[in-house]
Image (cartoon, rainbow, N blue to C red; front, side):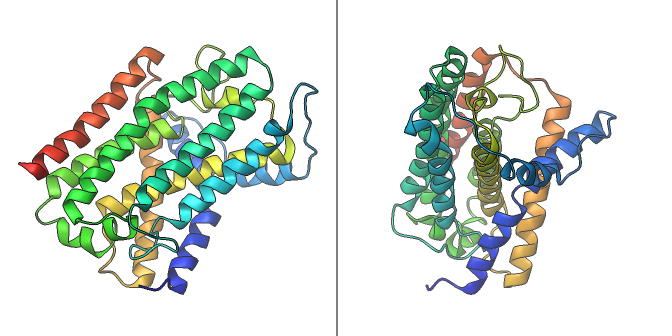
Length: 305
């Protein structure tokens, strides 16, 4: 199947609206906790302000630190090309591209961690250590979810797993796919440093994970990292929407509308979680991710029984 203009248009749409998702989550949390909160479009304002500033570099950093933001954004942008955001086919696809999709997110994490370690700061090294520790639990969960999708659809590419074969699989694999949806939502919270895994609004030394790694970035470099983080959130939300709401049978405008509504709903869900529970102790985070992996594993068992 050839790539359609609708697929590219949907990709551009996601790239544009991605910075609004953290704002929706923050606004939801503020409303539910009785506060006014920042505007939904706050991240757009922050990005515009940061792009007008100059980046400041420590004398202890090398090219690794300067290359980090660019590698992070490039890896996530390429990962977006493998995801069938229109519900039909992705711009890039091949058998086994799910491995490339996961590897690109791992590359982005690797570049960000290296940039943090390059500063020579023990504070950022602490955050980098926590980031990679939790990644060892999060990445297997993603592959377990992919395994359920492969077994349910018989496809080895994201375009097949989230396209027409998924629509045909729902009638006989509703329970496993629902478990995958729950696992992916937990994974979304973990991979994007949201409560209960991390709190993006805190700067308390003992609790920071993602924020501490980027403390030395400034100006356009910080803007690139913030945008890449918002885009990563949008892609995980789009993956969740793609699993729970197959859109292969919908018209192209309706498919795009459902995607936008789904992304907004996922952001609202994040805000609800953050307003109703506190951040877990660091020792509890692996247990949360193991639980998410267990649900996906149970989905595999249901399909193989």
